[in-house]
Image 1 (cartoon, one colour):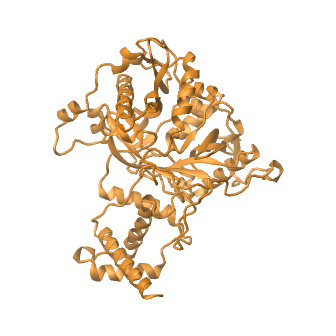
Image 2: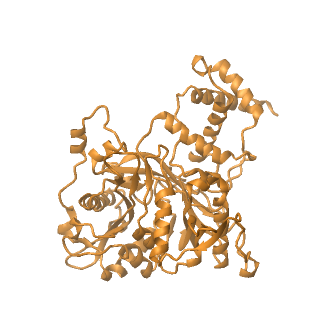
Length: 551
């Protein structure tokens, strides 16, 4: 090793010791995100899994650290990336010698966690080749040419038989159109799907939501993969995929959107999750689909992008009561409520704001298509898909000029357009969907009504100088601000959004608060350079890379 290399290595060693000492002394929070269940962590090395988890307000440092530990355990897996024992030993000795009194109690496991946390920080900060196979010490650059990692294969070369299950279980293809089977899926997810670190909140997907999310145009029944107990036929595990057309930079391709991996809590030791993932991947291959898009709160190798959750409080007394958020020490509850007060009616009503209708589908499809081309990775939708996404989940009940004041039975999606009264041109549209969470162990409230920002678009984006002059920002504040008013009238407690599309420019001014959850985006069998998300990438600002909203 040259003298320069030795000097660089010593400097790096010192930096590691200093960071490890700080982490061991509790001076630096571990990077955190919402993690999935034990099953989902078991499949950290798998190629296709959806592990979205609810994001809550800031937790205490102890909880943040415990989240990092869970993610690290998933990453570590005893594989080649594990921190060697001799490295841990050397750093531990240096920490105890140089870390001061606060680091005297450091132990090997804490040091290992500290080193792994630093490794995660490298990934999040873009130092470890996010989006590729990982940037090696040799200085390997991100891929210059996008494309498949493994070539597609003819159907006859794909494994024809289902992967074997333990003898007490059997495969089951769920018919989501059958109310009885849809109810089974709802009950499985309601009792066993992703919950937060404190076991305070758990996603509660309604039957109407699942029917809307799992039956887009061209869906395949075979991609709704379940596992039952052979003796009782009870549904105990599930995973799904739905077709999606994706554009990433200059490439457009058909893929599957993988979601809703869930295994019954009592069967987490049976290792069913990896088999579920392999089986849904096989089913996709049989249909000629060899790419997939999925997301995860857990950091897996290796995300193409990461976005952060933000939350806009609507029902502050309830959110404080269930400990979703807290009143800052410098503020009273009354003042917090006053600062978050919304207008009594949408601002754009007088400019043509109304609920989206069937006649709007062609114009919304055109506006959506042009608007999404401004981002690096986004879905490509036909008119049928736009119709399904924004109109099929509107629920049962009256529609009209006052529909923004009500919430219909079974409604899971809210979609609004702004139509110019003179030209009848649709100039803007905005949408959000309902995904409540069960509140566990609370004596008064049992459901957190959460709205999630879905897709939106505005013609203002195409006006010359719209971004530089902040006209785009102002228009989006008006459009999304009206969505907040409508959500509050519909009885939602909180409105969630991610740092994707153009959201970064308006979140702060609309009083969204930063959450502690990161949602990582992954592409299966597709090589591409990192996409801007929570951080800017190259000349693409933060948030403007990802244009995909995962349900």
